[in-house]
Length: 410
Ligand code: GAF
Image (cartoon, rainbow, N blue to C red; front, top):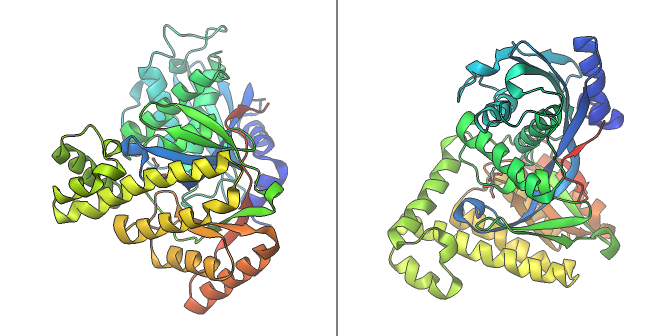
């Protein structure tokens, strides 16, 4: 059993709470958690004002927290070796983008955003605690890191929930959840310095059990679409290639810049404003290197709309070809796949998957395959054999069930 399995067995909230007691010798005031996500479809559309369709994973990161009074933030995490790792304390007043670096930059970035937003001054909680007084945070959980399943958003959202909870702020209303997601995204963009869109943080905050979240990234409007794959005899199989993906490199930012430049050349606010009817005309007005990027974004938005229509009608199996087309578009037009992802997708399809695609930012990470439950073991075996034959590291696979968004657990 790995340490991450141990976290699952105990539950991230219990693991974080126990670790808090062992580090600080007192009880946390509360434990809050937030999930990772799978994006069913709609990749690299979020920062183009487009549509996405994620659901929350059962895998969560939990933050056990208690206030301090000396203006310091302390961070500790339960690592994959099961041990507690502590970071050097940082003063809330000294936080500035880029410092601290490493994993603690994510929770520190959230504290910075809340400080900048005035949580900790005029919006002090009932008990009078404010973010600038400092806090102890201990984080534990089982969201795989570097797997394209949004562990960064989970840590940001769990931290935001914890700090807002300590401040006595409400966290349950839908509008408030969207606002927390924007703060968490701001921490990632401005503090950590990764230019992501709103997909991951919104999924972590706003998803609900048993549903996929249809999100219009321009208006922020959401719709909870029922998604009962199990009831239809189907499973969403996640295939984590274990090729570590990072959005901090230049490629994610390059794609984003390319699409923003294309919108600018077309005189449009965003690529959302290119429709299937105007696509060919738009492509004819762009330099060759931007053509495939724009084609991906515009056709991917249409695929999200098409998949959503099927799901609203309860026709889950019919999204298979839409998932396949999405992968081809990411592989050939957006060029964000890699040999391991392509092998996972191709093998899953050949072994009977109804559809398969990479999910998340790309350049490694995970693929998903929509499979009949009766075929799942055959698909898993075929993928394992294909990876062994290719000499790749064995992928980790699990069935993803749509789960709840961020919550207070203790
Ligand atoms: C990553 C980013 F964080 C998201 O904002 C989104 O762009 C995604 O890649 C691609 O769809 O997860």
